[in-house]
Image 1 (tube, rainbow, N blue to C red):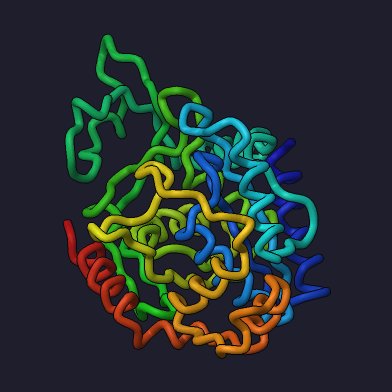
Image 2 (cartoon, one colour; image 1 turned 30 degrees about the vertical axis):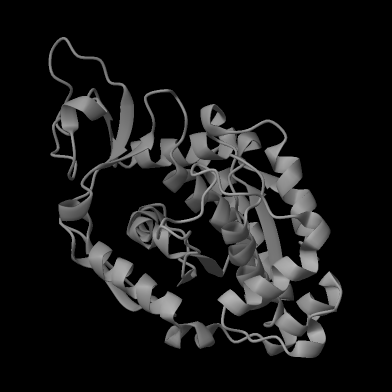
Amino acid sequence: MSTNSLIKEIGSNVSGVASSVSYVGRFAPSPTGPLHFGSAVAALASFAQARSRRGRWTVRIEDIDPPREQPGASAAILNALTALGLEWDGPVRYQSQRAAAYDEALATLDTAGWTFGCACTRKQLGAGPYPGTCRNGVAAGKIARSIRVRVDAEEIEFEDKLHGSFKQDLRRKVGDFIVLRSDGLYSYHLAVVVDDAADGITEIVRGADLIDSTPRQIYLQSILRLVTPAYVHIPLVLDDKGTKLSKQAFADPIDVRAAPRVLIEALRFLQQHPPPELLDGSADEIVAWAVTHWDIHALAQSSTQQAADQAVKAARNSA
């Protein structure tokens, strides 16, 4: 695929969406395990946000990190979404089938002088922003292991619907960041930006743990000349120790046989307050109620949102 064809693909998808529907949302899980409650909350929130606006809701499986993926997880996630009554539009997008598009985006960045090879290892760099070790060339005797994007003095600011204005000095906080890893795999940031543009995504509803990643994605959208969607970062579901529910932390998968109960608990977490008569409803009935009564701004006054705001404040102010 040439640079022009990449732009054409993105443009045709966006213009096609714009002509038929103004809102396009998405749920993009990584197949590192089955769907747990935290992911079910994120899926329901993004679904209800899209459907309440008469928009499209798409699903993308972010399977570009094979070492972390679990066999059968993609199918299990899709089966769980179906059991929950969260019906997506169009075919499922698999990032493992998108290498040509990522190749083209990287070539575009390289041609414009935005990238450079880096020989540094994590052990050598330690914590903190990338110090620019290789941005003017790899030292003699060293071999480039990864590819980074140049970040100059750049403050990124965006408006989150729940958290308000979020600013990040990208060079001070992150520095030049990786878009192609040393193992030959594309970074999450590059892949997600290319796919969101290709799918015409207009708003992204996802967990607050990803708000710190958003400036890097907006930066890539800018230098690739792609449209930046709106962002909503919702509170995370935490375990009794205050740790985010995750597959890496061995969170239990949802019980698809009890889908209505899972949906009710998810709505309660999202401060949507389903009525008592809905407790005995089917998954489809609960989802229909959720879409009709959806108010994402109800999260703004919740204790879970206040905790999320503290985490966002820490991310905003950290060096």
